[in-house]
Amino acid sequence: MISQSNSIKNLGLIILLLFFQVAVVFAQSDPTAQKRVSGTYVIQNINLIASPGSTPLQTSIVIKDGLIVEVGSAAKVPLEAQIIKGDSLYAYPAFIDAFSTVGVTRPADPERPANFIPSQPSDEIAGITPWRQVLDYYDASNNSINDWRKLGFAIAHVGPEGGMIPGKTAIVTYGGPNSTNIITRNTALIAKLRNSGGGRSLYPGTTLGVMAKFRDVYKNTELSAKHDQVFASTSGINRPERNKTYEAMYPVINKQIPVLFEVNNDLDARRALMLQKELGFKLGLVGLQESDNLIDEIKRTGSMAILSLKLPDNAASKAKKDELTEEGKERLTRVEDAYQRALGQAASFEKEGVPFAFASVGIRPNDFMKNLELMIKAGLSEKAALAALTTNPASMLGISRFAGTVEKGKLANLILSTGPLFTENTQIKHVIADGFIFNYEIKTTKKESNGNGGTGSADLSGSWEYISETPAGSGSGMMEIKKEGSSYVGTITYDSPTGGGKDTAEMKNITFSNNELKFSFGVSAAGMSLDVNVSGLVDGSNYSGSLSIADFGSFPLTATKKPNQLN
Image (cartoon, rainbow, N blue to C red; front, side):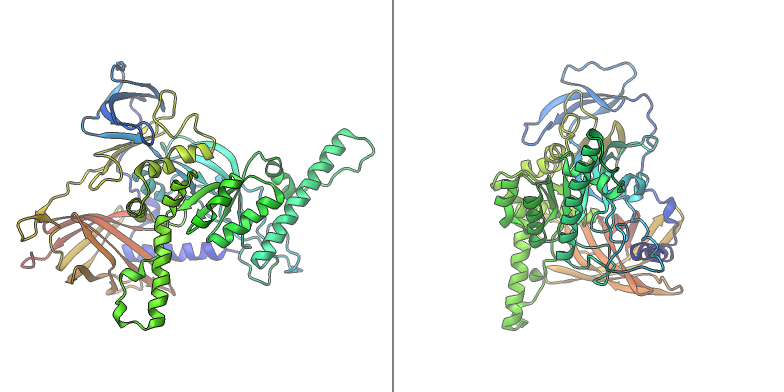
């Protein structure tokens, strides 16, 4: 039986093939070949920020076979070294994703036997599979990894997809194609407060049922471990029956690895904290949102706090409040309050001195830096933001001895940017992951006259003809954009997934600042829809950017404004 998740992904792939006329399996968004010439590099005269909060220091960095072997202005240049000119560039420790499912596929649902009883499912059918390892379902060549590496990520803590206990995680690098890219296996156990998707008819079918089942599994694991110990040391004891579920849970009850609960709200987080208090396992909370009221409890239990970078839709900023009823205004106020709480959550953790890390799970690459910058504007310091992406996840994952900072003896994982990170117009020029250097095109941001003697972004209004290029072909269409007040609205046409002609979609969430245009639109076919995200830079009548779809990667897109419509 093919799982519902796999069916959706397969259907999404069909839509993608029809829409863009590409073979996704051949798509590669990373522009560089990664064959090492010597394995030795020297980055000269770079402005180094070695750790969060440190003062920029102009220095040189020597890298050999994936390790940083020397840092200093007087560093010797090996004869075989390739030189990277760091003048005017900034170096930072590359980012560590505290939890990710990028490149991970969900296992197919198991066959149900003919005499299947929903109230007594096997562990596998119930979504209890702690013996599974994520690396069995991880594809290091997945194109989406390129999108995250381009944003500065060099290490990821990847977890399995599945039911209430999907399996164990691993830590991987986003390095070269000829390396295993595996750092550690069986780093943590993932758990969720929901079942495998079989509905209420399948036990456990409710949140409380899942909690009860988790207790049952944990307690039975303790009994199984004690039985094993007694049998090994005492004669006259019955041989214990082997149970792969309980044996896979031994590292958890022995506190060798933590349980990472994926939580969607503060109620789920409270329930996970309740289980931890009762059973005593090491706990991590993944995907925390609007959980500032749980900071004291998280601090008391010493639980790992892994915050979501996902933000709710800021509907209040788009609504015309004067046209709403009183009830509508109250509802809108609650939405705005939730949005502001989500924006300020990381700043609240920082204020209370509770270490936290960020996770990519649940967000698209295009939203990462945008949401992070919004959190910084809401009070999160740049130092804490960098720590949440470097030193904090390194500490939580137990890899601080070789990752999280730029120091002699650590893995060569660095970001080389055109300016200080988190500042306007800064771009990433190189990402070094596991000693492999990935180069990215730097686009100039051209300031144009705004008609008032100053500088600013040009008016987008008009018709733009675009082409989306792929290794297997191209797609084309029109973007019709007009200005309404201080914002833009528009539509985009594209090749119809059903074949023949064009379809039209609304351009949503249009933002245009410092000549950077971003928007999204939906593509529908066969009863489902895909979100397409577009971002790039406007240079006069030309637009150069990329479009991306979750799980399928990104593809170049260029557009030209039609003549006689320049503003």
